[in-house]
Image (cartoon, rainbow, N blue to C red):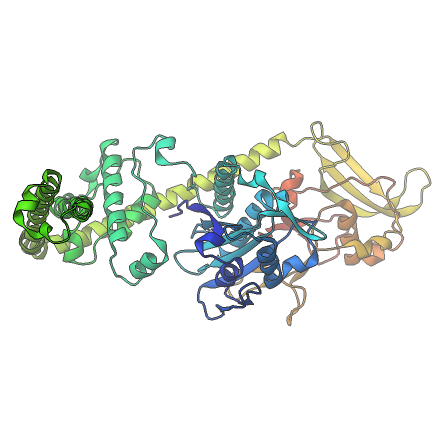
Length: 586
């Protein structure tokens, strides 16, 4: 499930950071810090997929060298508290393919930072795992042909943060939509979105690695508790439909506080299925009794830590009073002298009271941990052996079936929506509303005939669109042969499906095709396929700017046609050039 995370920080020398060391770590490379003389070797660091440097047009060529770039940054900053760079860390949706994720991040960086004059060093980490993310190091000074200049204070404007956060959400959501996902991420807090949800806690790399290995962490446990509370909030706002489950499944769902919202999507069900417990111990943690006791322990621990902090402050204050007393050299150990200092005695009484409260909390914590929880687990284990395990298996089967039905329905809705949008685009596509230089048409005829006006036998191309019929005449089309691009070979794979591959292949292509972006290229395809008909073909006096053909052989918008490859049959037609199919390159 896609999540939103984007954090910003300043890499500052006063905090002990080095721009060279930071860049070496994030890019997984070996770099020498010329200012300190230290060599930073992170070539063995795992998880670094790729590191890319993006520069504005005004930057000199040496800025693309990572070592030269960040050593120049260090050299330009002379103060001990200098701000060396700005770093942005963002989470990449796991649903995106690696290539699409990479291009999405780079497009976001170019649009928001490089276009403003910043140099960006982008490092992609863990792209093939469950925590794909990117680190973006940005320069803080303007750069020109002579190198770095003065600080650009406008880049520190706090209003930029909101703009950058919103921009990343837009880029990520467009990429998710292009990949066929309906879910979206939002840069706003739950409160600003008007949602009654509690935000989760960022795990961090250490906790994330431990959770991946199956080791439960305190932060992970807090997030699981927060997710459970959010689910309860969602339940309180919608009608539940657990009644649709069979009796064993409904019984175990009630025991584990698992509910299915009326508006559940396949993604919601998938999250619930993945969160189902694997054993009785994990199942017990989902019960109301277990959650109540664990929340009690966490609250007790927090209260104990608060009292401990307060006690330390009181002890420090008492020690300072004792030290400042004129009789502290030797008489301070005499009970009479302690009795004679009221403020000191007050602090001692406070310390004693806090210690007693802390001891009660410690005893309560130990009782819950050593007595209440084991007793609850023992009672739950009996229930689990009797009917819990079988009920959970039945619940899993029913949820998987329901999730598959919803996913199929969502896919059908998505395809229907895409078809409706395409039909709407086709309905709006008419020559009356298109640019005058664009002619949208289909090829209906091709052959030789006397040219009107002079009677010379030459080739013609017959076109139809919604405004009527058009005929193009001409010859001397050979010079357009070299202007063809995007040539593709169509092959049959082992399954019998038609696929495209690079032009260089060991097997002969089934059909060689070309992008039908213009009439010039289309006619050149005709010339190459049937040279005996087109050897003396004369160039038309005017060329339409683009040739557009939809899947249904009806005129299509140029934006749609740009994604298509139209090809013809591989045999000579007498008077007709039929369109065989359209292949979606994407």
